Length: 397
Ligand SMILES: [Zn+2]
Figure (cartoon, rainbow, N blue to C red):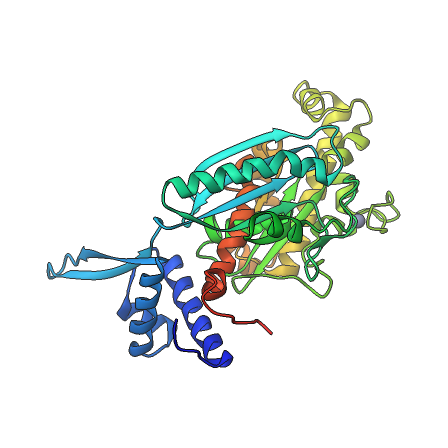
């Protein structure tokens, strides 16, 4: 880019590129003519910008034959040969790193546990060499890592890139994770709380790829969520949008970390279920007792499922998603009950949307958070391609 352009022109150019990149991603192969129709940009703009995107190495042309007339059509799709992304999941007891191409295909992955290690600096001592290995691996393949995504227990103050007061995650409050990693590697770093990162994993690589409105719920040691509306993850005024674990279900129930009483999380998370059961401290043991038809355990499970149905019904009515995706450590235990849960939730929502309700299992299993961390970077590439490739000084505001 040798010619200096005014900032506002760069911004328009980048926004138009973003529209094209999103359409190309969602259609997994599209012609320029179709892009003109879908993007409402002029054919001249589409021709120019797709040429720039090809030169940047983000997309490529390929030929397909149209069966009707046997003529070749030139289509566009993502070029996965030039750039890679590193996704880092830091949880309370473990970490996982994945190196992927732009299509989210995992090239390399590594995980480990951090039980008993609480200081962020010590955890980073473990992770930093692994990140460097992945950057080196990408470069031996002739590819460039364009950014690091980090999924971490929230809530997070996104404006300053620091954690607020994550429960049971000592030492991380106010830790400057973004600036620490940016200084270390000279790469752009993006951080998101784990539930919302997981929602982004579905948005870009999973069940939400062709869906504009979706709700992701993760059930494990806590209950978290992420809401995608019109294709975008919604933040809210304080970054609390979609904190689904904190809807009130039990009047005058247990005090929750958030300050409220009787939140869904206090009864529906793994600790919540074990507290209700009050016989043991392992979720495996609890479900073993259920399968042995122990009456108290069976009743606890019935109450848990009833709470889940109430929560799903409420959340469906509040967010009006096309799909609700359920993930987290608890889901595999509940999977065998999902058919009946779907039936009962359907009975509780407006009749005219009953047949449209989709409740599905999350796509990426135990790698959901790491995949979400990758999606975080990918989304930035789609919205700000010139900035991400450091070609223009476009400032958001
Ligand atoms: Zn709460």
